[in-house]
Image 1 (cartoon, rainbow, N blue to C red):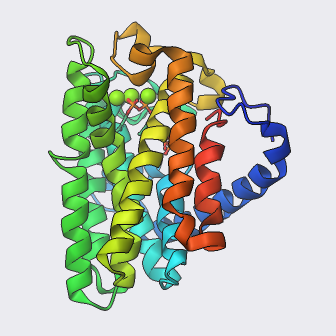
Image 2: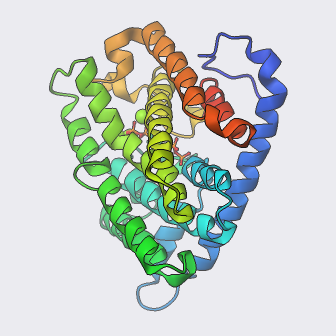
Image 3: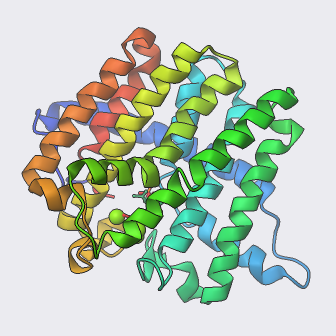
Length: 314
Ligand code: IPE
Ligand code: IPE
Ligand code: MG
Ligand code: MG
Ligand code: MG
């Protein structure tokens, strides 16, 4: 494993190295599986509208970490959900996530020209195409969930559609992005930034984990436990994203770093400082493991993921 640049984890990361190498191998293999499903779903460019298919494929097949699919797949394994169903939900959430990144990078939002190690979609194509790419990916996600291949029960498919709509919409990711757009001009306190992060990033994480319980028809207590894990790992993830922005390198992150400070964005790093944010992230990793105790070894990778995120450099 390459030398981590963040090293939020002060609990002897060296001894955990083998575990993290194994976890990364599992993440790569899950990414390949979900990519194969996305490859089947996203048509090859054709017809008069071939440019939109080219740009959707450009944005999706750019080597993202596929972290949200990993959450769907691993939470689904807790309940022995059929792999093909979990993979389609994983493909749907990755489509929504990629749409959110394409729009997040637009000049009217974060104005970034590098994403996943290559030019952002509006740079590689143009702004109108990037807006349409996001729109196309969002619609695609709902088409995936609504199709019978995602689950034989129409009621469960409908529930997944409703939950993704909520997670991605005004009370979820889009609402969080709205607050984030104001985070350069307004002062936000700690609690308000937590709300911002839980909406812009956490809501999609919640969908990933809860959808597994929905696919399995598992009871509300499982849904609640997974929601709590998702909320905490989502916040941890966004804190480490903000730490990467403050401390990481553009080369390993595959996106420009140092942007939050230059745009005066309120983040947990800006309110707590680097050390305070690291302590917060460590506490959240403990909380993640505690939420999953009841699943014992079946949840080992989900617990380890929280600790791994602490030392990620991309
Ligand atoms: C970046 O997400 C956007 C945030 C929510 C912070 P990821 O770091 O998961 O991006 P990819 O999918 O790996 O490119
Ligand atoms: C983006 O947050 C969150 C969403 C796309 C919903 P950031 O703006 O911090 O993500 P990066 O740092 O550009 O990946
Ligand atoms: Mg942003
Ligand atoms: Mg951004
Ligand atoms: Mg960021």
